Image (tube, rainbow, N blue to C red):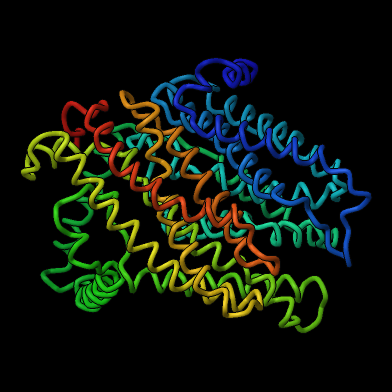
Length: 486
């Protein structure tokens, strides 16, 4: 165990562990914001109120630190040497628990300084552990199993909801017995997720498959040609699959201008139907969550005015969803040799221009969707006068377009090498922090400062500059020499 713990302080831990950089950055900001706060008390009408912007930095920092520790753990226990070295997996299992306990105690310090209850803090941190130790996205793809889609969607929804201070404030204000229950659930989910059993050797897998095939043949021999139950049930299952695939096609339908020319798979994004369904799901989920929290806390029928005010996070969440995936194609470049050589683009510069042309179309489309939905929704929920709608429409459109091009700064600053950590930092900073700050100003009852409107509208000229400079930098960057092995 001591050797496993020492690895968390060695260069092995920091190698290709991009979450650690973001975790340290956001945690530092959270500590600074907390210790700069000198309020006498943060309890207001039975609710623990967090300092402005603290909850965002704290949650992102905690997620980054926990994810960096989990990345090291899964790299170790899933390596081929782990199953061959006696006691290695058990030592790594004990080490990751010690590391996670240290992270929890460290990140509890600023909240304890602000006066939050310790049990509620640990309950909130246990939910973060259950999110960030996820094994589906850790380690190289060759060493992990298939992604559990339902679990991934559920955890992503919880992660996004906790970006908003109202959710954290509600959890920090829960009675002790509810906080204890959440702590037990979060800890149990974390312990279960971290439990790892090595895969059987290739020879064992082959033997198992061979025995299964022999049993299947013998069963067919005994059945004397009679159709089995699985064969009889095949038509109904096939019809269900066809209905499911038809629904998926409707959800993923896109306008023709996004399907031509051929682009990497990471540029595939939901069309209008899928986008609208995601928005409706986000609004309904936030409403149900806040209604349940209000009932559990007050044991009374939720107040519509309070629910309406708490629903202001819905337009922020929709805007975050609109911009968070726009730059994913910049990091995954394995398919680029295929497209460059077989799709008739010509030179690398022509291919880079085509990529950014498609990126511009996706960005503008998402900006239009977010503007049309979030502007009237935010004004209604905030109770503002409808005369602010034109300014809000313009501002949100410029915000989404500008943040969509923000990760391109990574190509300008580091043109020769792909730096996923820098791209992730710019993406998170823009899509999460920038959106919340901007929409917080737009939907407040105070007049939006002129300088803030100028910064928001500046997203359009900034995008134009990036659209001109970034393709040239991308053409000079390092790409994969050949396509990835199947």
